[in-house]
Each structure stands twice: as structure tokens, then as C-alpha cells.
Length: 115
Length: 112
Image (cartoon, rainbow over all chains, first blue to last red; front, top):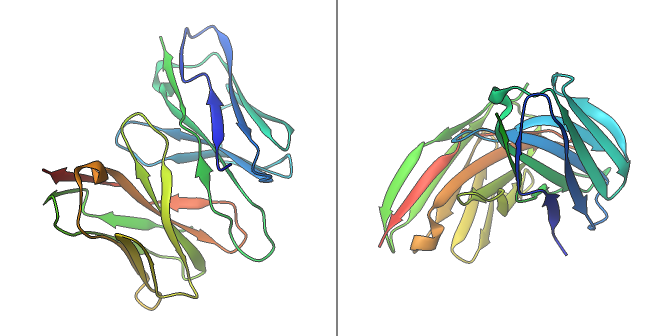
């Protein structure tokens, strides 16, 4: 099973709302990622969790709050977003190996629209 | 940090022709180079990858070559089909470093 599942697929929210994006994988991967992707652009790294601990935060605004409840789940909590935050949010996972970089597997993404 | 450049930004080929997409990277410590295909409205899908201890890797109609000296790697698709039409991204990463640097993407259009 090489699948990363993201919910919801589409989300529309106002600037005062609080919502969450969810991600799940059952490949035994111990690194999980959030990427943001704007139209016609490559994925842009936001956060990396390694062994359920936040290891990389690419200076993301605090209105985005990640959470990794366990090794299979990753959440992204959204609060007071701006219209420019509208994008495709991608979750990904990979193995963590002392020998080499693991393959990165993406989910299908959550399309977020901020009104 | 690493800088990955990808060319061309768009590529149109006739069905059955070959397509080549090229990427260069700046950090000689990068040692893992995956290629992703992204169809409209979907997440990127890993299609092939290569590690720095290998010069070439092939999987059916898709191949990737790596030149460590010149710091560039290429994706080759032979006998292209309309379903190959998508955006392709190259990426580079370092040993046990959970950060992937992506190229800017190539939109491939295969005309029937």
C-alpha cells in the first residue's frame, strides 16, 4: 500500500474560520511533510516531521499550525487565513533511513480557497 | 542551499516521438534525484528516481541519466503517448536530509 490519504479534497473558508486538513499514511514512514503548491509552480515545503517531532519549519506564518498526533497522522490547523493562502496543500511521507534519502510519496492534495 | 533548474518549461511532441527534460543542480552533496509527474488536479506521482552511485536507470519507456561531474540529470520518455501529457518536476535531495528541492516544472503536451 503506497498511499497517502488527504481530507478534505476541497475546502472553502472565510478569513475568520478555523479549519483543519488531515493526512494519513500506513506505509510505516516516519517522516511526514506539508507542502503548499500554487498554480503552475512546484511544491513549496512548509513543515517536516521526523519521528513525530517537528524538524523543519520553513518560516511559515503562525496562522498555519501543524500537528503530528502519531506516526501515521499529520494535521494542518488553519486559522485567520488570507486569500493569498488559497492553494493546493500536499501531504507527503518518506522513510527515514540512516543510509539514504527515502522516496517521497505525495497525497492527492487538499484544494483550499480562502474567501 | 541547493538550486535546481529545469528546462524546458513547456514541451510539445507528436505521439510516438521522444521527450527529454533536463535539470541541473548546484550542491555537489545532493545524491538522490527523483522525477514526479503531476496530472491536473492531482498530487505529484513519483515515476522514476536515481541515486548518485548510478549513471542511468530505465523503467519501460522512461529512463533517467545522471552526470555527477556536470551536475545535471535528465528524464527521457520514448514512444510518447497522449496520457504522458502532464507537468513533470525534477528534484534533488541530500543524504538522509528530509528536504527536497524541486525544479520549476515542465509541461509536456503529447499531440495525438
